[in-house]
Length: 81
Image (cartoon, rainbow, N blue to C red; front, side, top):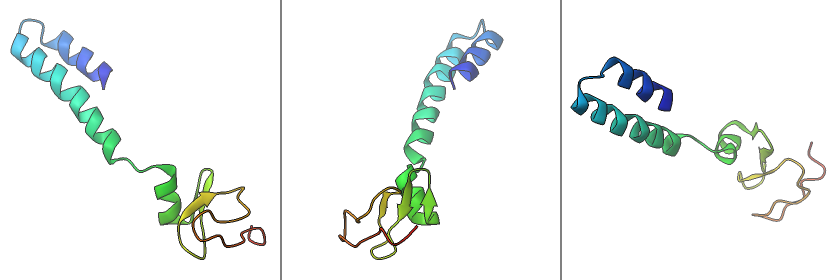
């Protein structure tokens, strides 16, 4: 997003309002995109497994892949691979 605002700034050298608007909108858009993105735990719950997380088959909450016991429902996960 920063590179986009620099690129817009170079093309609008003599338009201070347009530069101010671009300098405000680009970081705001990046912040909104960051807020809307899912974490690895949320994706693991949706897809069953993602990154270092997997979904507990008993309570459907995300737990670490290495976990032997679910931290939410206390079910044994060691037999599951």
